[in-house]
Image (cartoon, rainbow, N blue to C red):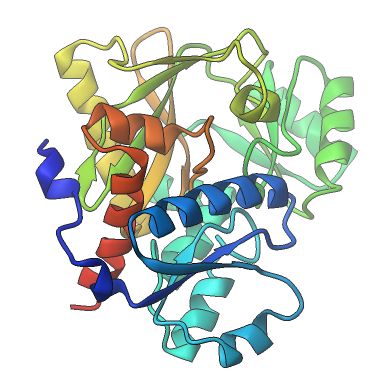
Length: 316
């Protein structure tokens, strides 16, 4: 991998006036504010004519009143990462960073992403959809324990819980239902977790994650100081290439563009299992894509410019 191939070689004037979209109303608002301010600072530090918009009720008005040549989307979760913002910007004729409408909507839906992967023979943990206590009992009988419960349309591990019994599963399903009408339960994969970022058609160095928590939860992602990140990830060369290859296939199946991040587990037999793909990954001081980019030879500002440059090149 060549860092030079990843970097932007465009003059800052080529970007025009850039609106950095962050905040919003999703459950990931606070993380989006941190990510957005970091991106905005990096762009302005590079001399880009960039300004921030905390996406709220006045967003449509600002979209029509402000001069916007390009949007850098740093909205995490629903309303920004699910295809709705992408569709609005396309209707307004404003180019934007990252994946398009379909890939964004699909990646935000963990259940349907899994269904697409399964249809292509890609490995992803066995699962069930929970709508009632009876569903919980049936899932427990079918999948066994432990299990992981997830709202189907949330990120940042919001609403997730690891469970060891039917009673815990019912409680976790009820809690996750506060975030999403559709709740997913997955077979627990015991083993190391990896996250792999893609940027401009290349796979960045994989990161191995370690945490004393029961799983890589919200606290481990954004607040804790005892989360471990390993780059190099500790796999042998053949296994690392296998991990990168499955990441590429996972992203191609969803149709991601520009940048993304895939989360993968490895079981005791060395088998990789795809969990999800993120189309607007975090860009905070605890975030993983900046770590992977740094390992590839790009600092934070170069990463931000590379993501923005891809939106120019995608226009042709």
